[in-house]
Every structure is written in structure tokens, then in C-alpha cells.
Amino acid sequence: MKKIVALLIGLMISVTVFAGCGKSTTSSDNGGSTLSKIKSAGTIVIGVDDTYPPMEFRDKSGKLVGFDVDVADEVAKKMGVKTKYVPTSWDGIFLALNSKKFDMIQSSVSITDERKKNMIFSEPYIYGGSSIFVRTDNTTIKTGDDLKGKIIGCQVGTTSQDVLSKMTGMKEVKKYNAMTDAFMDLANGRVEAVVSDPEVGDYYISSQKDKIKRLSAALNEEPIGTAFRTSDKDLRDAYQKAFDELKKDGTLSKISEKWFGNDIYKDKK
Image (cartoon, rainbow, N blue to C red; front, side, top):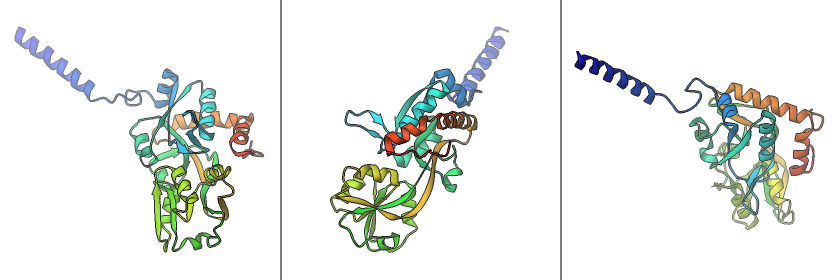
């Protein structure tokens, strides 16, 4: 009888242990949503590519700063939580989101139909796209058609790379892990043009207007939003609500003026 009881107890323990091992450590798998986990922890974890000024980058002291950082900090404050940032290489940032390395991405993510298959987005909070930057002494490149036969730079894994991949006739498309490296090579004549979001390029050349200029012609315009896992609609909605309140009370206008020198939210409150 004792052996039978012992066997039954052992079986019950084994079932309990294996059942426990089969569960994920994430809050959503344990019956709680990511939003409830964030509220309980008091912190929202955000993935960023910290090489993309003025959106998100390191200042001279090594501190993470930028438009996206200021926006995320204010939204989190409105939600009643703090922010924690996880710097992540752009070419792996979406995989890291779906692997639950962080709760969301606030890092100038262009909203595309392809990305919507694997993520959900906030409403667009800014509009970027694929603008063309050249040296100020360049007179041969005036539109996208003039990129044929040229060496062009872009950041790897971006929609600018996607746009360039659909074009033909270019001599080479050099892909950089950091946008700053692409502009450095442009200034030094190693590439003949760089394709990038206008905000990023404009910020980079603000102190180098004698070397680099942005063409009036662009390859496209893209809405930019905050990215979430498809299972985190409640988090996306809470984030959007806080964002809308900040736009209405003028907080986002102040952040825009700080980083861009103008209010991109004017007449949109």
C-alpha cells in the first residue's frame, strides 16, 4: 500500500513539475497580458536602434537621447510607468520584439503592409520616407533616375533598402549597420548618394550644409509608427490613448520643436 501511495505521490509531483516546465515565463502565457505585466512592474521595456539621430542616438556623454526617446518617456509617464531601453541592431529588432526581448519598438519604424503581417502599429506619429542625399558639389544626381550607375548607401534592413532593391541600373548599393557611417562615407566620397529618412539626414547635415544636401525629389513617403506584437492590442491602445493626450496638450509639439526646429503637430491636435 505504501508503495502504491508513494507511486501515486511521485506521479502527481512529476505531472506538476512537467506542467510547470511547459509554461512560458512571460506574463501573457501565465494568464496576464503584457500591459498588466508592465503596470505591475512599473516599467515598459522598449527596443531601439541607437544609431539613428535625431530619432534615437547616443550623445557625447553616451546617454540615449532623441525624438523617439523623449516621446516614449512622456507617453510612459502618462501611462504611469517608467521606461527601460534595449539597444538592438536594426536587422534583428523585429525578431527580438516577437521573441519578447522587449515590449514594443519606438525606433522610427515605417508602417508597411509586409510588416503588418507580423506586428501591429500605433497611428503614424511622423512621416518619413526615402529621401536622397548627395554632396553639395554633386551636379549629376537630381532625381531617383540619376542613381543609375552610381554607388548608393543605405541602412541595412530599412525600407530605404527595400525601395532601392526594386530599382535597377545602380552600380552598387552599400548597406550599413549604422546610418551615421553611411553619411560619413558620403561626406568622404566613398558613396555618391545616401537614401534615408529625411529627418535623419537633415539632422546629420545640419552642421555640414557645406558638404551634404537633400534633393527636393524623394523616392517615396512613409508613415512611421510604434510597433507591438500582434497579441498586444491592449498595450497598443493604451499607448495610443496616452499619445493622443500628449498631442492635444502640446507636449509633443514642444518635443518636435526641440529636435526638428518646427511643430510637426501644428493643426493636428
